[in-house]
Length: 240
Image 1 (cartoon, rainbow, N blue to C red):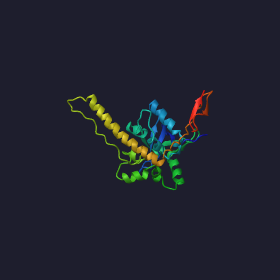
Image 2 (image 1 turned 180 degrees about the vertical axis):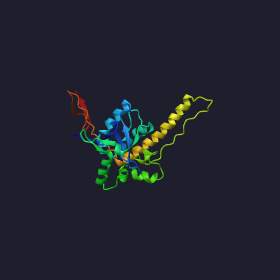
Image 3 (image 1 turned 120 degrees about the vertical axis):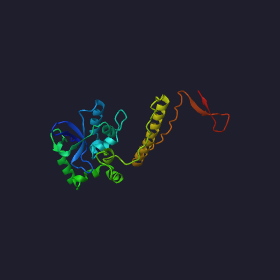
Image 4 (image 1 turned 90 degrees about the horizontal axis):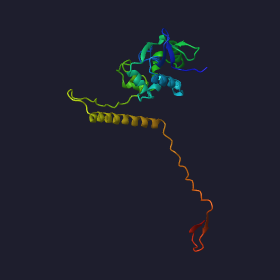
């Protein structure tokens, strides 16, 4: 029977959840979960398909892979779920993990087992999240609950700042003003995308396409090439 990580349910309500982060920095007794029942069909299908992928199953936390993926509507998954208030902080002993249809274990107990395997304390499990150490150093005074997106998995990098579009209270924004705002946002997003592309190429340089030999055009049926008797050089003429 196939074993799947990150899948669980709330013990009291039996509500299905995906465990985004099994512990939180400074609060190993709490987890961040995503209830799936209240999601739109688009988001529900997207996260359920994602959690079954090899990349998600190989990741230490589901939140790591959520941060690198986009919803079909173009929104970054982790940020969209957080912005929409869909991520819930719950006690780890209130979540039952279901690695298979027949096996169940409390998340709190599972965290203890994982900590023993990694030879660390449960409080230190958050350090195994991708980018956790760099984030902790860069955000020493940040609130891990209010800043979950950065403290539990997102890499530290400067975010593009786009000035909000504002109009005079007595004026209506014109199409030209709105277009300028869109172009400004697009330029900022393009710079961020270029930086992400560079980081990806540094990690996994793209392979150069090999040049294919140019095929010679086949000769027409019924033709042959002979040397011209009028000259002794290599000039050729075609006789049909």
